[in-house]
Length: 415
Image (cartoon, rainbow, N blue to C red; front, side, top):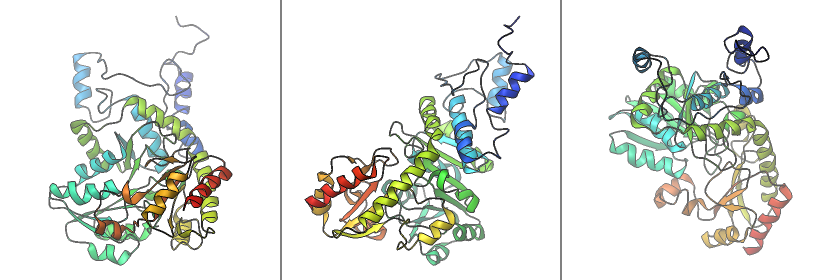
């Protein structure tokens, strides 16, 4: 007989409380509630926080149960390369936040993009890409994918006519970031969705700068969303991971690829990302606030040639950003009136900012894109992407804005 003070986990009352922590009541809840509660179905232990299932495999009740789990169409715990309760919790929470039918977690942001391509493209297919992407993403499409017979055309991100004219009979995917890295270009998702649907192609959006807290591409017509969870989803620079979200028919193809190829997320990293999601809305609001203040301040500095941040009314994508984002994000870039040496002197003079290529951290980070994140591109590719030697990218953290400005002032003094 079970202790009368502890509800039987199989009782109606216990199961009702388990459901109240999971997916059933949450579709009508607000974002912050979903980010904290969604996807957690408590075990019989009654834990409050999400557990880490640190196991490589799972025990079957019988040989017949093992056969059923391997063969069954529904996900069940078999082997942590492709089925793990902690990872599944993270996937379900992301799916709910993005408004997707299903999400699939991966080992990194780049593996999320690679897995999407390897699962949904084949030799002879054609992809249209924005020319303003993270440097490694450009290399993936412009080099690796073409080795497998996938044709790729790069177009100016905001020139919708170029996107439309680039469509071919074999076009299967349109891929972009908005806002773009590092120039914060804003791409009209509704119009691109119409172009992709007319072409019967998939619209894939890297939503890393905004996260679902600020932008939901699927609601604007996109088919698939990818993230580097390493960035804002974690928020504290602790783990590497990625995630893809979209319709179940597409995600099932990714599950097959991940099960076979293995670029999957570890349970520990999934648990860290779950903890990050709990504060995502609060952090994104604070990032936006600090970035807006810093962008306005930088825009007034005499040594600055140009500031790239959609929160500025002078930004060409400002009104469009207002129509498809609920905030402008925490990343900005600016060009100095000078050359590479001036940019390097500025960066080296800062003390508070972390000189690292990562972004989305509570700590402000600073980097020189032309020689780091986009350093492997050719001069022509950098020119096409608008990456100049005088450009500096800042991912604005959550320190006191006065301290961030003071650190930028050290940079200006060195220039």
